[in-house]
Image (cartoon, rainbow, N blue to C red):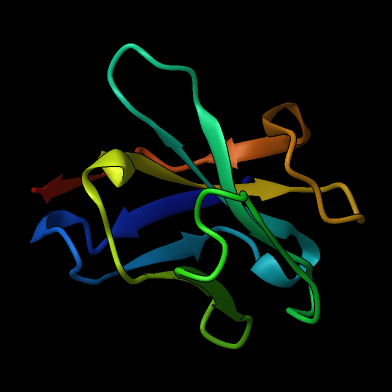
Length: 124
C-alpha cells in the first residue's frame, strides 16, 4: 500500500509559477511509474505528466509541454511538478498517482494509488 500526499497548490496570477510536491509513505516509489493528473470542475480527469521509475523518461500532455516539468527523487520518495507560465486554463485539482505498469503511461486506469489532490487556481 502506498499513501500519496500532495502539497504546494494555491492561488497564483497568470504567468506565475507553482511547484507541486507529492510525498509517499508505505512503500518506496522507485517501484512505480509516477504521474500527475488534474480535474477541473465539470470536466473529466486528464493526464498532465508522467515519469518513469528511474526518472530517465518523461511524458507530457500537449497543453503543458514546455511549461511544466516533472521530476522525482527516489531517495526522498517524492515527485514534483514545476509549473511555469500558468494560465487560467490550468486551474484544477492536481493529483499525484502511482502506476505499477513498467512502461510510462498516460492512462489513468493504469494508476493504482492516488493522492487526495491539491487545488491550483490561476487568476487572470
